[in-house]
Length: 232
Image (cartoon, rainbow, N blue to C red; front, side, top):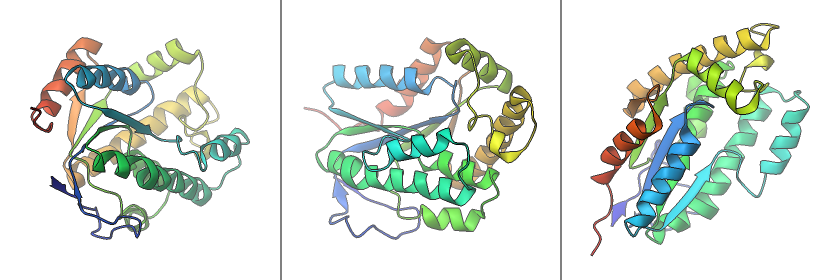
């Protein structure tokens, strides 16, 4: 059994026990970094090893995900409203999905976690101390791996996947540039800089994801393997 720890030492009232047998692994990275592909492969690998797997990620809460998606379509959300929307989405999943899975001994694979949410908020001008306090009840993962990809690669991969760039992932709400391509480049560089601060503060690992899928997957498995619960 492992003890549950929180970033700020403050537990949510819904958390009744601090002991759990499961594991929480987080994959961070921008759109186009290969997160979804790597998590899908990791899930299959873990299941082949006999582990039950639970997936979670941003904008997947049954409580607010649909409302958040609809609100973003209008491109009129204030920065604070956007921040609190995502925080609600995260904590709803934490209480109702993640914690029950960890108590049941599952391996939870998170497709992004509070690090992305904090980075986005800070880049949009939110006070760092306010953001850290907001997410202080979040539980500390067993491992966090940030897939770092060059900005040029991100542009290429996003165009290949969607043939366009996303308004919010391009930071168009920040007024960085009227040109979406230029705004995307500037916004992603700002996020990467903030992730450097987060990496120094929280000590997670950075993985070179400019490489091929197999090379990245091999490294992820190697890093997670030693942290997995022992099976009979």
